[in-house]
Length: 291
View 1 (cartoon, rainbow, N blue to C red):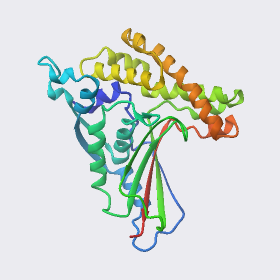
View 2 (cartoon, helix red, strand yellow):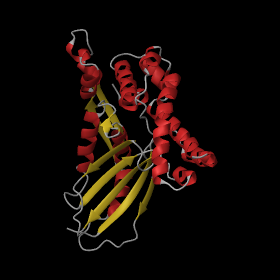
View 3 (tube, rainbow, N blue to C red):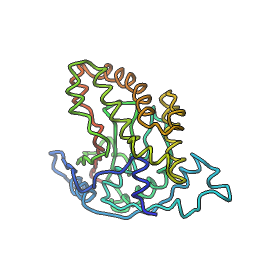
View 4 (cartoon, one colour):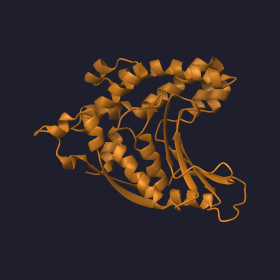
């Protein structure tokens, strides 16, 4: 089975990684034998790869009976294949590891994340390079996804960096957040919460997943239930009725006040908070240093 169907149903289908990528670099001059950070970033954006992985870790976490029952899911139904640029694959695998307060939402993409990490690391120099990946609705938000490949730079090293912005596949939120900023932090937070939940659970696609075959239906049900537990929202009745828009509204209603509190603690004004919104992008930072 190809990766496309599962990507859609788990809400992580991204815009082609070759579209919308912005590469920026620091103004420092690479010295000594430091690797070229901008060159690595450009390679991540343009080089492509095919990754084969399986859903067994996620299914074992969400519904182990599907693996243990004689009438359970055939092992071949767990096989997936993903293709894209290295930066796109890295963004996608990182989004598969979303956390709430540092606790993983699901483990459906554990094998994918591992396989993508190894594939990207195989293209990097053995030393002197770190690749960090971050998705967050805004800095400091309780919901985020991160990954890091390679060692950290020594404290004494001169570090050079280049940044890739890759579309997250989540609904854009920054412009609407800025427009809402005149109405205060709560209004900005509601925009961000709604778009974050809609990115994690696109309502129509999530509803189709709940109605779909195994293991997709179990994985989507588990995803909703985990979000409810981590955000302290009751969504099981809505999920059972496949009322995904109502379930999303319940999750967003609980998430929004938490985002507003964090915004107040970090930003002087609602406008400052809105300007920092980054729901729609995954940021990849390549750091290099002299050996």
